[in-house]
Image 1 (tube, rainbow, N blue to C red):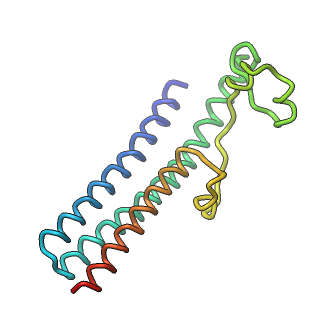
Image 2 (tube, helix red, strand yellow):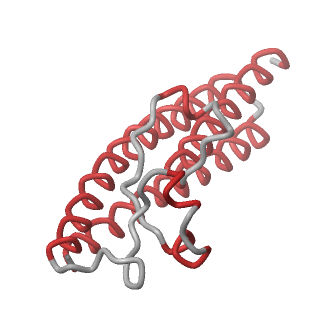
Length: 155
């Protein structure tokens, strides 16, 4: 179980690092654009940001699948150890059944993370860390595209 948690945390750290790298590249894009005011330099920098962001999306998507596998593994181990009880590790079952339980049990309940579809990124009613990270990548991609379009219009 400890290794599964370590894998999960390592993947989560890598996912956040992709966001950090893409954000720094986005800031670099602004620097290149303002320093050189050159459409070719801005284009290369924007393409770098977009490509890095596409890889970030792929990494995030892949790590979500890993997260689901690790949580299933962890929950199976917990089940075999007899830990799934409302007073130790409550499991989130169906929403109706959860409403009948105490607020403490509801707050502490765990469940396997859900798979999501590509369009879930646009659905702001759905939220998870992975969807948030995907939205950041898409926002930075859009930002790079906007800088590219604006530079081409100015030049």
